Length: 259
Length: 264
Image (cartoon, each protein chain N blue to C red):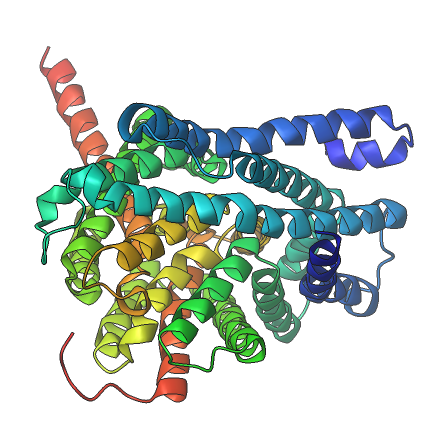
């Protein structure tokens, strides 16, 4: 444990060094300004290093095993079909609980995601109030839930990831032409923002665990890709919601005008 | 503002209060996951969790880690970084702005916790599938290559994003063009890299990168006349989620060669 901690600390010092050296170097030598609150900054850097080391150790101890473990248990033959072994090539509907678990994990983590709360607030401003922050959060969370569930379905069936992503992109492109212009950059950003530091490891472990547990799947080929689904769907849902909200607002104002 | 004011008081009490608040925030981030898993274990699977003690300790480590990490960032690097992003965006030469933007994207991505964790996993997986030797050194090297590739791609994305804001290019053309490149490349990139390449896009833009890069974008858009920060300031993250896919696939082609058989 102690050995692991010291190794983790050493590695994180290196990881954090680049960003601190950049900021301090530019501040001192390019902008030629003194560094404000130097002592506070140094304490902060020590915190960053300690925090990163603990976080990475915690991932190995808890989040990764949790994801793998859930994947193994949810796909175990006695749980799914009540027999000792899985059929030779199991049908996709045998894994209903996997999809449900994936959907709920995606939905609940996204609803609580701080970055999304910020995006929802800004979207409300950008749309001059037609987009409600809560509505947007709910819609994006549903999007991520459906996305991750669809991603696990892809792993179970072993279909090509490219196919799903290409179709998804096509939908995003088509939506871009119809969505309100002011919302487009925000919608694109929301895709990357919604997958947080905590969700990513768990969801990745789930994908790798599933591809290892389901007969005929290979973690190297099928295991990754869930995060891609989770970042694609928010774009669709944000633009879709903006479209519907704008359409609804126009409809209502017309109704009011006509009395 | 609060954080700057806090720096002047050397008392320990506000610091402890802030740390406790961070603990609450970090716990809140994890709570949905924990609740869902516990509910599934108790209601659906009805099986005891193996090594509960390890899980509890690990979860606590994650919470403590996130708490210190975010608190540490907000004590020093975030205020300085945001101030500098604004300073470079407002005045100064284009060259320095681009250099700063590139290095900002690169270095924040190197420090991104989720990316560190995921590339390590990716290295384990390809080693198990015998794409690379499975000794620790080769896996560490592969993980590092992938991290540097992603970091490079985010740096390039920021440079592109700066040009976009300066020239007023609409973001959708860049993104749609980028998607076309991504989809086209998946047909020639080795299969073992495609999944992780797609995932790397969502992984890079997280705790460290998003606040600093967003500050650069909004600072730049608000310093140019006739630009709406809300419309032009965003879009950097979108570019930073796109370029990693392309760059990681290029890395895959360089490492494992082109995929010749068309079977997907």
